[in-house]
Image (cartoon, rainbow, N blue to C red; front, side, top):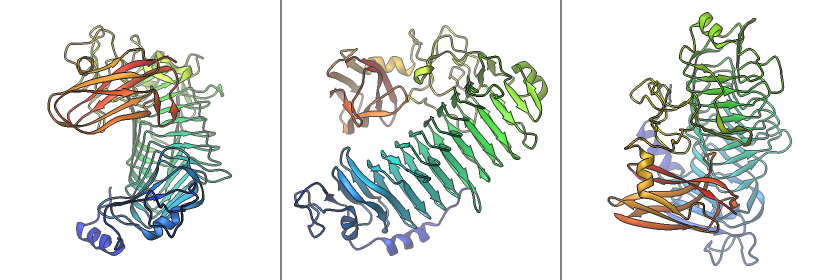
Length: 511
């Protein structure tokens, strides 16, 4: 189902589109500097005044344009491609704002770190990366509209306050949407649909969808062979919506507190899988809503290893005209959800969007790890953790993985699990920290490391170290500030990633 191109074809394309100025170089733009000019050479001392001026003079594989904070009354309109390496347009720090951005028919482009006020348009683009931006679209525009694209990566952005949909993928193939906040759209958070051959092979992972006027995610006409993994969906009109789509999967999603149906399936949907998900307390604004609604034209999905809960006593499921008030009645009629539970998920603090599990949660130590695409780590980067107080009833090679987006971290840890290792080799002092904290970690050999601070929703707050480090003990300092400014009081995680492991250490910040 995934389209490929020969290396010969790509090589010819790279030779044709990469300009003469395609060596690895860095150039600067500073619209707030009165000495800046588009006739300057683009050094930090003599920067360009506009992004367009810099891109006209310098482009291609390995070229990076660094943009200093200012209000830029222009679009980032990329008319040249990268090559073997990305052509990068990156904001330096916060405060670099542009009217919009667009890439048409180009490839190997990165746009990183901007506030983009008028949305992003991608047409016929390949291997375009949108990372760490705040993307807004007013009026009736979509924040990101992509059509006929391949290999997109939409990672770490805040996509908010769209006058219509947050993201629309139309005839997009083999792309990644990961670790974004997608919120407050007038209509839907994310839409996958088609004019021609369909939207295919999309991975939607660890995103947070909230306060959208319609569905969090809509798999529309001919959206197929895609997967959602460990997404959080709350306070939308619907959680998941499927319409004339097929061959899609939902693994470990949390669908909580949406105003109407948790999952809304209609217009001939087939070959859908829902597994390891937590679907609870939906229908907050509609007494005739259900956890899962399936119209008479659609096939009942493959559903198992889920957790459902309606404290209001509404029916859990409906297929066609038949409603099922209990999980037992649903299972008896359909044969689905034989290993699922109808119990409160017992999140830590769902009213404040903390969907971590507590020790009494029915989602602990019972996930199905045999599923195609099952994630080996949770949203916090933790692998499965065995709570020795709870019987392991999961399916697959790991019988103690948890359902939903987060692993429960037991207070008494089984010997040998990776949090026990992290306690030995990754520390924060003091804990709780106030103004600053000192981090120490130990490496057994030289490795490439990435040390970050993340919040409870899995968002990266600060990157403390990144690069090669020798064997031995290392230390770093965090001053409580990050990419979004001064961090607020709360619980955070240190995350240490190497080529062989991912460790996490929980700590508190008290202001």
